[in-house]
Length: 132
Image 1: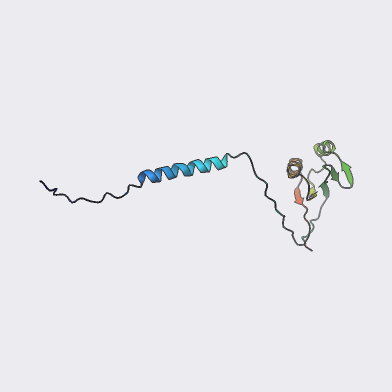
Image 2: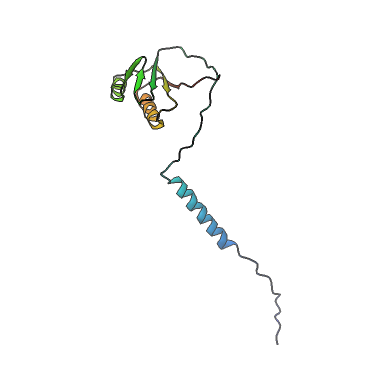
């Protein structure tokens, strides 16, 4: 019987294929998360802030009420009236302070903020409840 001159080496485990599979799975998970359509709501309580300094200048105050209607200053209006007044330049180059009830629909808040920012306001503030 012939003996091999070469030493038999322990081949070990080849991790190349394993690393390739892990990389592909990582890419798949990253893509799956980025294309997710559903966003789950997280119950959270927004932080309260201390007293701030009021800016000087002409200011218009808006509010989103719990019943879904809006308030411009002291006047209660519906969304269609709000949109029309914004198109007429109500907030053009003015400071805007926006209030929203804590039970208000978040989607409506975002829509109104978008309308206000597109209407040419010089600054947009979100009103918050002060610390007690």
